[in-house]
Length: 567
Image 1: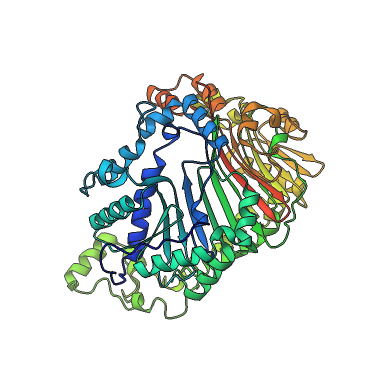
Image 2: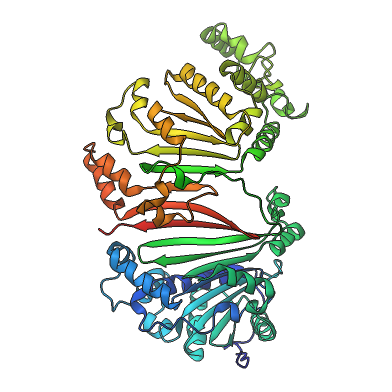
C-alpha cells in the first residue's frame, strides 16, 4: 500500500453538523450516477486491475457498496457484447454513439436545475472509474465514508468542494492510494485514512474470505457483516417496534452480492454465509418439470415453518379489535362518545323516522355506542380463528396440519404453454381443463389425502373440476389427467435453452422461472389489442427471468437473472 497522504481542507475545519449523513449520501448518489453511465463505451483497454475501494476503507467497516467501471476483462467483454446484442439498453440510458461519455449526460442531468456546476471544469478532470461507500461501526457519529477514485487530487478537492457548496453542506476530505475519502467532517476523513493505512477492509479475514468465495465481483457489489450490524441494531435500535427481530440474523454471519453482465444476460448473484451448514431436503428441481413449462415457482423446505407462521399470524391478529384482543379500557374513549350530541330532540326524532328500526341497531339504547348494538363489548364481533375453523369445516380442511402437508419438503406451481392462446376466449369452469397447470406436493405427510380434499373443495367452491394423483413422495393436482401424468414423472425443462439461460443447476433448491419469450409468442396468437401488442413489443427483448438458489458448505447462494433475445 502506498504512503498515506492526508490533505487538509481548503477552508478551516467545519463543526460537525447533523446533516453529515445527508451530505455523505448526497455526494455518493451524485458520484454513483456519474460513474454508472460510463458503461462499455468509455473503456479503451481491458485492464480491470488496480486499487479497489475496499483497499482504502478502514477495517472496521461493517457494510460496503461498490461500483466499478473498470472491472475484470471478462466483465468488460460481456457487457460490450450485451450492449451490442441489446441496443435498447444503450438507447434507454441515452447513448448515441460509442464516443459518448455518459458521465457528462448524467451529471449534467442531475445538476442542471439545482447547481451551477460545469462538468468539463468541475467533474471530468478528476473523476475516476470506481466508487465505494462504507458504513463504520458507530451509528451515533454517522460513520459514512465514501471512497471516490480520482485522477487528480487538486482538481478533486476543488470539484468535490463545489458539489458540497452547491448542496449547502459541510464535508471532510483526505486522500489515499488514488482515492478521495469523503466524510461528514474533516476529523473523520483524517481518522478514516489513518485507520485504512494501518489495516483496510480488504485485509480482514472475513471480508477476504467472502470476496474469494464470491468470485467475480462484477460491476456493482454489496457486502455486509450481519453479526456486527445485528449487534448495532440491538444496541442502538431504530425505534421501529421490531428491532429485536431485525437484529436476529437467523445464524447468518455475512452477505455478499454482485451485479454481473453476461453476453446475453444480467444477473444479481451472491450468497449468505451461515454459522451452520444448512440441511436441504432431497427433492425434484424445477428442471424436472415438463419441457413446455412457461412459468414455475417452487418453495423448498417450508413445511416445518408453515405451522409456526400460521400460529404467528393468529397471534398477530390478537392485537386487533376482532374478538376481545384489547384490554377492557381500549375502547373507553369510543364508548363515551355520543354521536347524537348537539342534535335537538326534533332532529333526533326526524333521524329515527328516517332510519326506522335501524335507529336502535345503529345507536343503541343510550345512543352512546357510535357503531351501535354494544359492539365494543366484545371487540368488533369477528373471531378470525373461529372463521378459519368454520372455513375448514365447510371444505374439509384442517389447520394448521394441512399447511405442513401442503408445503412439505417442496411445493411447486407449474404453468405450461398449452391453452395460453385461448385465454381471452375461455369461459366457464369447464374451460379450465384446456389449460396446462398444476401443483406438485412433495414430502409432506398426508399430501395425497390433502390433494383429494383440495380438489373437492375447489369443485364445491367454484365448480372447477381438477385431477389429483398420488406420487411416490406426495401428490399432484392438475387441470386435467394429461397434465397430472406429466407432473408425476421427470420432465426435461432443465435442458431447454431458456431455462439454462437464467437458472443455475436445475433449481433443486427452489426458485422462480418465467419463459417470457414463449409466453409472448403464445399470447400473440390470440390477436391481442393494439395496446397489449405494443406492450409485448417493449417486452420482447427479454427472453427469460429466473430466480434460483444453491447450497455449498456454509453458504446459501442466490441468483436473480434476466436473459435477452437475439432480436
